[in-house]
Image 1 (tube, rainbow, N blue to C red):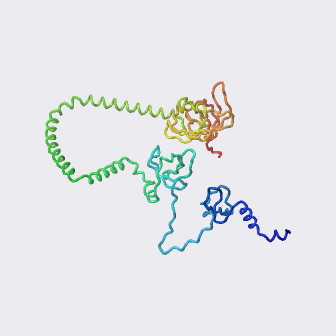
Image 2: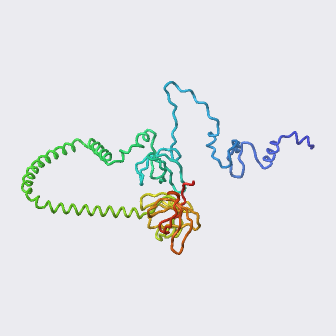
Image 3: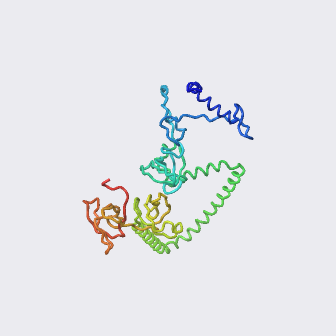
Length: 359
C-alpha cells in the first residue's frame, strides 16, 4: 500500500474495521450475554460562553430575546412576578418578632436556611428563617403591606367576630333552634335576676360609703406597685447593651454542651432588649442567645472602633486612643460631639465591627 491508498480511505472506515475485528455487527448487541442494541451517545456542542458544570437549562437566558408583539389599545403588558425562594419574591412573616409584616426577599443564606427580607414598613432589612415566611401575590402585598390597622387589637377582634358569625351560619338548623330556645329562657331568667339585683343594690348602697375609703387606699397601693414595676423594667432595659455588629465573647458553658464556650461571635440581629442572633466565625447562626450568655470584648490594638454600650454616651461610636490595663479603662475619641475624648471603663465599651461615619 502507498500513502495515496491510505488517504483515499475515510477515517470512519478504519473505525468500523476495528469494530468488526472485535466481533461487532451492525444492529446487534455486543458481549456474551448482553444482546441489547445500544445506540451510541451523540455529542452535543456546548454553547459558547457556557463553562464546565453549568446548568444547561440556563441556555435560554443566553439566547437573544424575541421581539414582543405590539400592545393593543388599553392593554397592559403582563410582568411575571418572581416566585419561590428567590430574590424579589413577595412574602409575609408568619412567626417571630416581625410576625404579620410583609416584605421582599433581598438575599438568601442557604447554609443556615435563612433569608434577608426588606420590610415594606420602614424599609429595614431583617434576617428570618425560611420556615417562618409564606409567599403572597402582588395584589395582597399592595393591599396589606402598609396597613397598620391589621395589627391592631380592634382589627383582630373584628376578624374573630366575623369568623364566629361564619361558623354560626354553618351550624345545623336544629342546633340553632335549641340555641334560640335556650337564649329566650336565659333572657327570662336574666329579667328575674335584674329585679333581685335592684333590691340587693338598694340594701347595699348604704354600706358602700363605709368601704369607699378602704377601696381608695387599696387602689392607691396598686398604682404604686405598678409604678415600681414599670421603673424596674425601665432600669432593666437601660442595663441591657445588646446592639448589632458588636464583637463579643460567648461565656455560656451549657449552650450546645459548651461547643461555643470562650469563642468570639458577632451580633447579627437583636430580637428584643435581652435576646439576639449571633454569627460565629465559621458563618453559623445561633438563635435565642441571651445577654447573660455574652460579655463585651476590648480590641487588642489601638485605633480600632468601639461602641459605648452603657452610660451617658450610650450608642456612640469611638476610636481607641490608649488603654490603661491597670485601671481597666480606655481613652476613646467619639466620632460625634466635636470628637470628644473620654476615659471610660472596659465594661461600658465593646469592639464594634459595623459601619462608621468615616465609611
